[in-house]
Length: 80
Image (cartoon, rainbow, N blue to C red; front, side, top):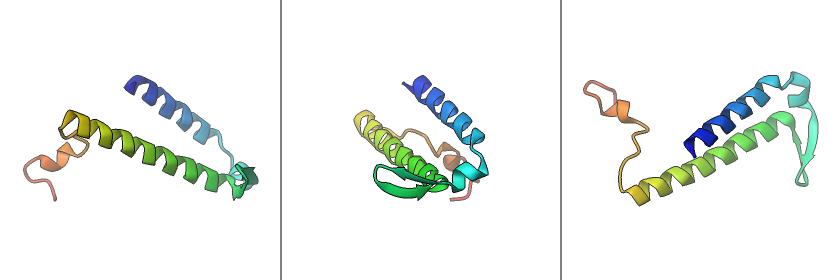
């Protein structure tokens, strides 16, 4: 699953890299909402982050352990 997620994120990065300024500023109608391209990109990134957080939370709960996203903060001398 992590491999598929990584591949999907990499593909999304390629799409973002191809976007031109005029596409980001152009108006679109998406699911009945009138937005510019950049607005749509932000919404998709936000939506992905929400679901990723849900998956991480559920995984952490089911495994009953820290997933180590911030393990560098546990090192001696790191700012807290």
